[in-house]
Length: 242
Image 1 (cartoon, rainbow, N blue to C red):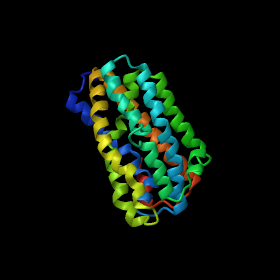
Image 2: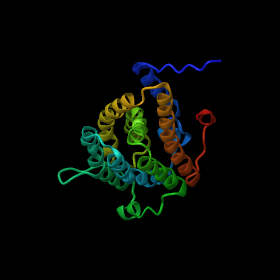
Image 3: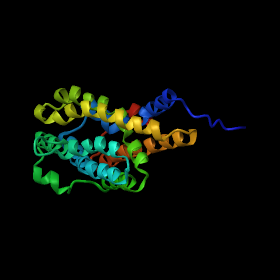
């Protein structure tokens, strides 16, 4: 039987990418428990401590993409992602607001920055992501950022549920989630534009789906590792996911 190698239209390709949302870590049992208010203080703190390793490596990932990208106009736009995380002389970045989140959860800044609580599985997944950004063609590394297609929903979910379920968390510490909703939408526009431009043939488009799945697996694996380090009871319906 002949395999259909007809490229998807831009609309079809975009829809194929969006369909991968079913594998996003918003459906991970740990995150389902977080949304439903079933995590303990220690489990929330464990997640914040481990996710911080991801946060501090995002600028390294983006700098790797910039170093491999010959397109000046792309570099000018992509540079904003580094500033978003690292901040600059005039404003705080995502790393700073994550520090505020940690403090709001009762975690000392010393403990957070020590990285002593980062479990091996999280470190391995994040390091694999940074390695991919350094060694893959720059447009493939840019494509891997498209998990941001699904990010605004997960941030809004935390803003909606944490004040009710985790009232011990100072609400001022949730600023990271508020900031990322707007910035993620902006970043999606750029990442999607690059992907649609550089992945034209059917084979290339299928490669883009593979890359997006790699990043989805990075995020899912991080929560797998946190779940093992901070065990919790899963509902039966959670086993059906992924």
